[in-house]
Amino acid sequence: MATPHDHECCQFLATVCYLSGNFIYACETFELEAPDPFEAERLARDRAAASNFHNLRGPELSVEVTVEDRPVPEDDPPPAPPGAVQPVCPRCGSADIICEACAHWDRTMQAWVLGSTYDSERCLACDAQGDLIARWEAVKPQGDMSADLP
Ligand SMILES: [Zn+2]
Image 1 (cartoon, rainbow, N blue to C red):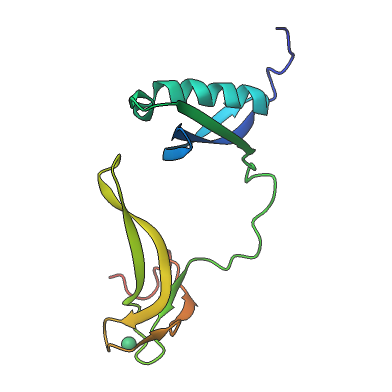
Image 2 (cartoon, helix red, strand yellow):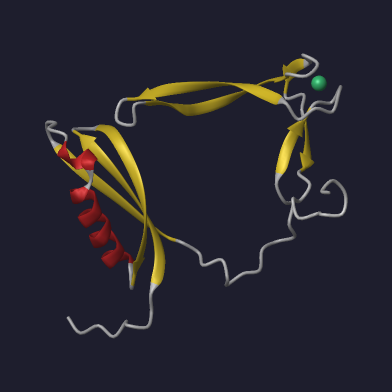
């Protein structure tokens, strides 16, 4: 019981999946602070037990917990910033690009959830379309006040 870890706290990312038999019907991710992964898992199971997902009356209800270290960003300086990027039309330069995707209905969240995206892209400005046609460009930082603002 007397573990001297008062000053050492780590960030963990716990993924909790709720299963009915072998079927995973929901997953949640918790950010936790704990001295070690075992304590993090215990905390995650506490949270899972209090979760709405846990109330489902399914046969063979069980909970699977995966704990991983969450790297503290201050430890490492970020790599040379590629910054945010966006797809841009190779023909007209517009950033109004859409791509085909498939979504699945999430009964718990009552919403369509993005499943995967496909290669097919299309420009809403000039209607150019094809597989992976967009160029990826850096998004200009918002902090540049010199030009557009009055
Ligand atoms: Zn275009």
